[in-house]
Length: 187
Ligand SMILES: [Cu+2]
Image (cartoon, rainbow, N blue to C red; front, side, top):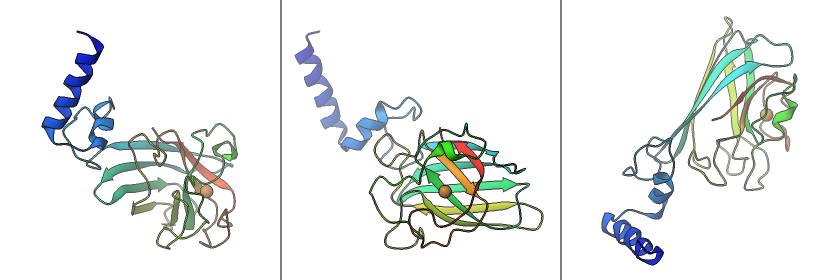
């Protein structure tokens, strides 16, 4: 059928469905598999976190889009006990032995570094995770400024980093969190 007719047909389908423009983005996303869901209802990304900088850490992270933002869940084992900074970094590249290939914090809005609960912080500032004396850590938080769907705030194609030290939640832009002991590409 002629291009013009096809264009009009898809507009008509969109209009008849009564759905917002963001659903159109989801409809073109092969991983969602469902064009009916509204914004932020279940799109998911994940990462396998591997040891870097000579650590023994192993872990995983999931990012689930839901009402109010992205639910981030990070789990690690065989990690050094204590507090560890966790960030989304801008490049989905964990190839360097020290994790430096992941670049700086994911910061699409050009904000200053801070606590995820502060009024200003990088989109990728996930705060600190507690690792117990057995080396296990679990960190869960909702991040309103992140997304899984394609767009400037999407975590896909970025990296999650676990640091050797705690994030002081103040020092810009790094949080003074030390080396990178875990890295995972988010996909
Ligand atoms: Cu970091």
